[in-house]
Length: 200
Image (cartoon, rainbow, N blue to C red; front, side):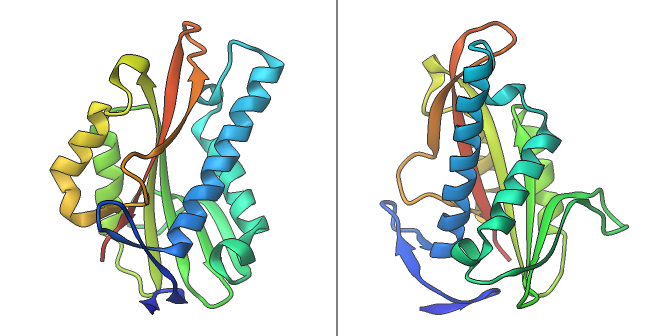
C-alpha cells in the first residue's frame, strides 16, 4: 500500500513488472465497458456503424456520466463536480475533469482515431498542468486494421517519443480491444483502447 493523490490504494503488478494502482484499472475497465456496450448498441441500430461513428464529445459525455454514476466503486469516493471541456484559461480546454469529495481532481484527454502526433500533443498538455492532488490520463480509441493488430504504429510512436513520462494502464501485454466496423467503408477493424497515466 502506498499514498496516491486520492489517498491509499492497492497496487497490482503487471506481466511486464510494472506496478499499477487499482483505481487506474477501475477507470480503464469502466471506460472499456462503456465504449464496448455503445458499439453493440450502434450495431443493433445499424449493422454498418460502430464506435467510431460516435463524435468524440459524445463519447466524452458518456464516459464522464458513467464515471460519476459509479464513482464510489471506481474511485472509492463520491464526486463533488464534473465538467466536459474544462478550461484553465492558459491552455486549451481539458476534455473531462472529475473532482471528488476529497478534493482530488482527475483529468482526462480523449482521442478517437487521429494520428500519433495529436496523442503526443495531448499528453504534453496534461504534463504541463501543475495542480496539486491531480491525476491525469490520456485515452486513445485507436482504429486498427486487422493486419496491424495488436501492434498499431501509433502506440509504438507514442511510447518511443514520450514513454518516460507515461505508464500503461494495463495489467496484460496488450491493451484491451474489441471488434468493430468502419462506418466509412463497412470494413471490419479493431478498436484498441489505449490508456496511459501521466507521471508527475
